[in-house]
Image (cartoon, rainbow, N blue to C red; front, side, top):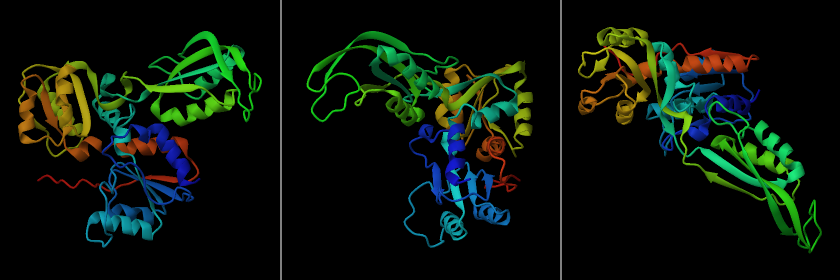
Length: 364
C-alpha cells in the first residue's frame, strides 16, 4: 500500500477540505507514492516520536498536530521543528497531519471528549458554513433518471438523515452544433430543440471533483451545461465543538472531579460555581476561548475547553461554568481514534499507537 492510499482513508474520516484556513494539514514530509512499512500515530511529532518510528520500522507518522505550522526558511537544526523534519527526511519517514480537519469532523476530536464524558444527544456546537453546494444540470428526459442515480451513487443528494434528495423540472433546451462539434443528438449547423429535465442536487464540498467526474462520464452531451453555487446553509455534521447532555443532571463539584479523573489532568481551572446542577455540556478540544459565546447561546451549563486566559474566565458572566482541562488533556484520545479507524481499514501492516506522552506542560 502506498502512502496515498492511507491518505485516502484519512480523508474519508476527516476531509482536509474542512480544515481551518490558518491550518497546515496533509502530507507535510515525504512522497505519497512511497510503499508503507508501518504507521505510527501520535498527537505531536517530536524527535522522540521519529526515533520511535525508526525503532518500529514505521515510515509514516500520522500526527494530530502539524510539526510545520509556519514557513521554515532554514534547516540548520537550531529549532525542534527543524530537527524533526531533518531527521524524518534522513530516515525516509513521511509525516501526515490531520489537525483541524479532525476537529471539524463529527466523529472526531470533540466526539471523543463527549464519549469520555458519557454525553448523549450530541450536536455540533459551531456548524461550518460554505461547504454545501448545489449542482444544476440538464439532460434529455429519457436519460435524466440514470444520470440522477449515478450522481446519488457518487455522494450527491445527502441532507442530514436523508439521501437521494433532488429537485427536477422539465422544459426545452436549445443548441446549435458548430462545424467542429460532435453532437450526440441534433445536426451540424441546425438549431436543435430537446425536451430536457433540469436536475438539482446538493453535495458536500469535498466531493465536488468526484461529482463532476460522474456528471461528465454519464452525460451523453459533448458539452455538458451545468452550474454550481455555494449555499448559505450550515452543515450540521461538520464544525467546531460539540454540545450534548448527561443522562442525568449532576452536582457541579462532582462533575468537575469527574472531568479531572476522566482526562487524567493535573488540575481543572474553572470559573465561579453557579450552585445549580449540570446537565447540558459543551466541549471544544484545544484552544476554544472563541466559542464561549456559542456555548452560552446553546444553553450549556458548562463549557469544557483549554488555554483560557485570565480575563476570559470573566466571560462566563454567571451564565455557565468555564472549565480549562489543558490542551494536551483535551486532545489526548484523538490518537486512539485514528488508530482504531485505520486498523479497521488496513490490515496488511502494523499501525502503532505511540506510547510517548508529548505534553509539554507539567504539574507539581
